[in-house]
Length: 334
Ligand code: BTN
Image (cartoon, protein in one colour):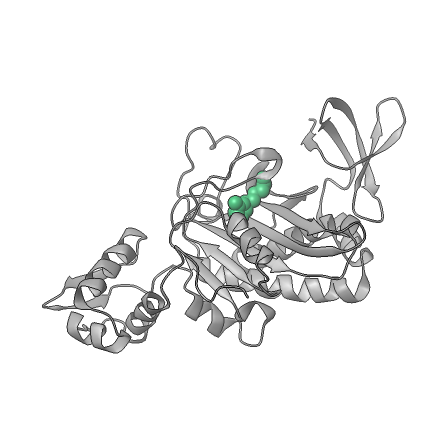
């Protein structure tokens, strides 16, 4: 049986504290009343309020004068998300962490202990966020979206990479709906804006030879990093940097999960074509792009020549031969 709560996951009563504040915005509530209403001691209330302040929730006041919220918080509380996702596959089991090493690591553990399809693992901060090809993923506290979804689709393992491309399409649509920006998709897993990386997807799976047991899809989006660290600023960007103002992470996350669910159901009904056709239209990298391919020990230049049926990228090399890329890094050649 999967656990109902996880070590390190946010206490459900802390989430109720945020809801209590949000429902009584600008009204001062005493520490004693909060303690009574959510069923914890006054010292726990104080500790949790300090924790909320650390992630940028603007709680004003003191235990004796009472506390109030200065502004509706931009944290990804399960309660709020559940309300926005009523009836959705992703509203049932939401695990929230203020801090964890990697939401993909947590999801993998949950999946192995029998957690059902649809579980959502969210973090405000990751200390060992994972990227593709063993890279790390910069996961600044309360600035980005760091989310992993657990799926149990009845598909063959060769189809699993399509879910990475699908997640890219869902993220692209959600970002467009919220900000009006239109990020590009770079095969297989990058969201790109103005030539810089805005987000990425890391899909991991466990499968038998012919059937997938589970797939976890980890999505990272740079949202409210006002500035990125100097070592990343020439290659990465954020929605705040691109739009000049902060964006609501809860709203973007809810949009992303709704898009994802609808794309996922469509894929299960219609098959690979529903993704490859859309991806080919949505990505400037799918056809006719001059690229450098670094593919393990091999690397070469060529022009992209569309997607194979299971979503693999085809590239026509400079010597005229068309090769199918299974895994590799693609860089645009100017
Ligand atoms: C990449 O572009 O290299 C993939 C980045 C994927 C990052 C996300 S953040 C949420 C999830 N948890 C992780 O540790 N990684 C993914």
